[in-house]
Image (tube, rainbow, N blue to C red; front, side):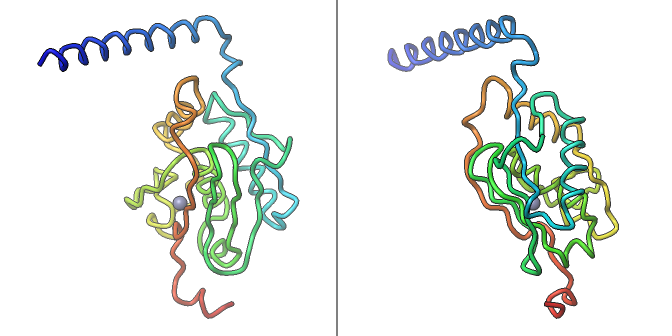
Length: 188
Ligand SMILES: [Zn+2]
């Protein structure tokens, strides 16, 4: 019991210390110091390069803590024929997005692109069928063309790229976000 009390006190002190540190960091640094570049490369993106640029603009407009630009190859955009679009995140803001050419004929290519980049920016899938969410992916159906993150999705990205939680989101591979109709398989 004494131990648990000591633990509680320690936890309280640690929380207070972290809060103090966080507050100090916010006050000491200008807002722009939090912005982190996410450098994407479209040299392998083929017909989807323009969608990558549009998706980057969307993410830049909806977030405060990232700036997507063609300043390097932290994020490689490419495409393939069949097998499904996916994102391979090696760490927060780094990895590869692969767009399935056939899938992009069924679903909105811009929504696919913005969604897959969302994985690179730290977001998980949320297959609840809600077209208002970007990360609902293909669960919202082929008629859903919304390419914009919800305010909560954008806020989550800002949080991940903010001062505190940069180590919270590590590697991951995200496949099957856009289940293709049966006819797509026959096209290969
Ligand atoms: Zn997904």
